[in-house]
Length: 497
Image 1 (cartoon, rainbow, N blue to C red):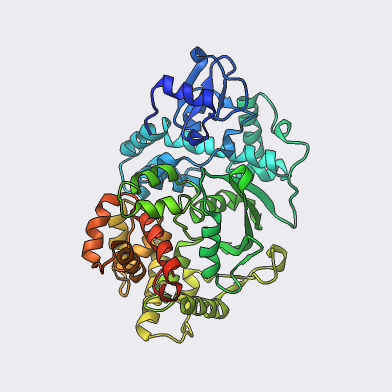
Image 2: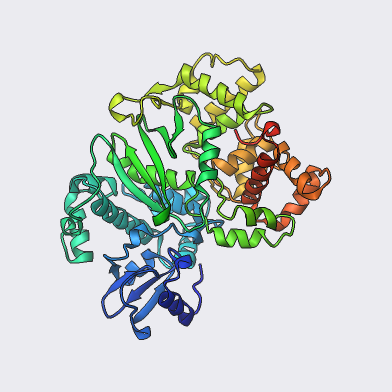
């Protein structure tokens, strides 16, 4: 991301413009602190300000995080969206550079670019190296846990990827000139049986009602539920299982997560997945401005400016839902998914359930690949596709990771027999989080497009029109689906599995 001119950045700081929160940070040479542009502190003099595209760049330049505006809770970096470094950041967030012999060369190999190219991408978009970005994220996540929870310092160190408590203490003393415990608020959210509470910010507008309705319509019994404006579901990682609950705090422009999980080391992975599930990193203003350039799409964007493209908790789960939903209604696909969970899901330990009705983890790929019979009443060809999908996911752990762009993703998915263009595009959109994925043959999309044009439209014609929507076709699809659902929910058959 290239920052605007220094004078423009300073005007943003003077006006406390929230639209730039997370997109730039200011380092103040007179205090040695870096802040968000919305910091309530007195505006520093122009000559004392340096502007950075990321917290990592500011920290690498020798500045320490502000204790008032808390850079660790700034909205996620939208500059990652739609570039090759989107992948890099997702991998870093899940611990790809947190010890265990990992290094930038290995990360570059996973992403599918050279090490030098990866470093250039990081410097170009974030002003810092991959290692610096990973280290800064680790420190800021630890600071958030200290500030917002009652976790022990040993657990905070483990959860944020530090090798040991001694190293954790050294880093914090070196950065803040204070021991970690001095950063803890006197009144913090309690932890224990009720889980760990964290808040993740977004850039408004954010259509929480649309997200909630989307998830409720597709909620798998036993796995997820929407109740009293809250979304709850079970989660599973590396054999351990737990639960999460999500609510919207509109006044603070954030989502509040209650995480109940047996392994604190998994917190960075859980948080990264939740960001993708709820599309918290979208630069929605930029996306809306781009899509509104099309006169046919502009009215839809205007009616729903906060509409996001929901992801999924687990890539394999989303892929299974897509296959289950081929050529049937959303309700029928939901029933099949419920039956699959009933037969092959694993119960979550009672100590890690937030609600009795949400008690079963969705079966993982290894479990479905090894079973002799899925036991589902559906065509044999589709059952075979599920088996092949499960085996492919076991053999390739990166199957649902974006490793080189959408075309490479689609080729890998369509190499699985039974996964066609629509299914691959849908998986790319929700599971892989490709912002330009576009399942053009979807009947819901075609019907909605026909409605706004006043005439029937072919997939080829829609694909041609969608060229101007790139690289945000997934969001255009979301607007079309939403419009189609409002027009005729009864016919919304093959939209979203």
